[in-house]
Each structure stands twice: as structure tokens, then as C-alpha cells.
Length: 309
Ligand code: MRU
Image (tube, rainbow, N blue to C red; front, side, top):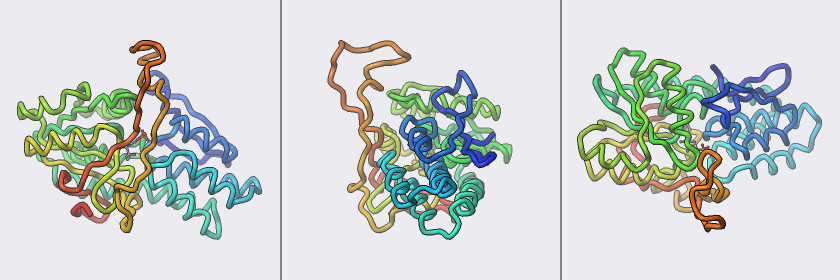
């Protein structure tokens, strides 16, 4: 299963808003449709957003659009994941946008396998691993970063159990990570976001592995709730790892300068289509948070495990 494919000069995407109920595909044949897919989270997860954006640039090129304008508009689709900006600039500065996009598509799969290879060194037989949000195949072209580490350990016949945080408000853990792991017959249990600290205090979580949207000086930006998990992990001496490709690094910037996306309040006001608070309730809905470096045991990259920066 690939989250993203290039088929007959169209970008083919798994519609992630429909999972786990339906496996539906969305086709984009111009860059504006790619922007909508990123904004509406048909495609989401930092590496997948990057690769989709690179094909958006390729579509702009094939359709004879103004490349500079396409680049600016695609970059404005979502503000936080650095992979979006990195991918658009890489294609913009290439001689052949389609070739470059296809190269990035292949690199993403190779990178995730390498992250999995290095990452499974930290997973012991019998471990229960907690993950937050979805840093799996659905967040990339295939295989995943955090879930790539889990897949690699499972394929080495390590007996592992996975715990997925629900990941309110959009439920990426419940809807996407659980679904993916079940497809691969990897034992998985779902917990409410508020339960991880208690489970750690009971010795029921051995390691945490999450993905990242941006890594810079001072820490890591990832899905909202990651920092709370990191604090609980530190309190209970549970190793806390981040798995991410080098394209997620912004080495010279401070992580505290990251623009954190604020999403529509209805994502919080409604659950499964039903309103869960009084009508008109004011909401704060940041999509990401910052985990400072001192909470992070190591960062698993395609070149090996490194210290946070
Ligand atoms: O809002 P999303 O679903 O795009 O957020 C995704 C995450 O936060 C992931 O953990 C991150 O992008 C890493 S995916 C390999």
C-alpha cells in the first residue's frame, strides 16, 4: 500500500479523512488540487506533505504554470511541517521538476527503511512501545518513520506490543496508526490521550517513539500532545525517541521560532459529527507542540541515532 502514487500524470492519494471506514483515492491533476488535499488533510504527515507538494510542483510544470507563484501558493497550504518548504524549494531549483519529484518519492521509501534499520536497535524483545499521532506509512510514501521502527522490529521477530494515543482532536492515532498496524498484524491497543502517564507509572510502557514535523535548535515540533507524553516519560524514566528523516531538520533555526498551526475550532467542538460543548464555545486548537531537547533520548535518522540539537 502506498499513500502517494504518480499514475498517468496524476497524483494519486489515499484519502486519509476516510480511513478506517473506506480506502478511497483522490486524484489531482493540477497544483491547486494538491493544495486543497494538503489543507483538508487528505494527505498529511510531514514527509507525505513534502512528497505531495513536490508532485504539485511537477503538475504546475507540466501544466505550464508560473512556477514561482505555484511554489508560494503550495507553501502556504500548511505552516508547520518543514518538509513542505524543503520539497517545494528542491523542485523549484531543479532542472526537471517531474524527475526531481519522482526522485524524492523513491528517497522517502529508502529513508524510512534506513530509519527502521537503525531504530529497531533500540527496541528490545518484549517491549511495549507507545506512539502518538501517525508517523506511519500514511504519513510518508510508505513504511513510516516511528511506525517504520516498529515494523522493522516486528519483521525481526521481536515480540512487541504497540500502544497508540487516540490523538485528539483529529484522531490520527485511533483512525490511522491503529488501522495501519492491524493491517500488518502488529499487536496494538488504543488508549485515550490522557492515559499514557498512568500507564507509564504502572510500568506498562517501555519506550516512546514518535515522528516530527520540524527539528531545530532546542527541540522537536510534533503533533499536539507530544510534549505531555515527553514530560510523563521523563518523570517515569521511559526512553523517548523521535524518528525522522534529515529533511525534517532546520539546523540553524530555533525550534521556538516555529509557526504552530492553529486549526478550526470545530475540530474540538465536534466529535464524530456531534457537538460536545455548548454552542458557540470559544476554542484554542493548536495542531502541534514543542518538546524541548532535554526530554528527548535520541533522534533516529536514516544515518543513525543522534542527539537532539
Ligand atoms: O497534522 P498532521 O496529521 O499532519 O500531523 C502529523 C504529525 O504530527 C506526525 O507525527 C509528523 O508529521 C511525522 S510523520 C512521519
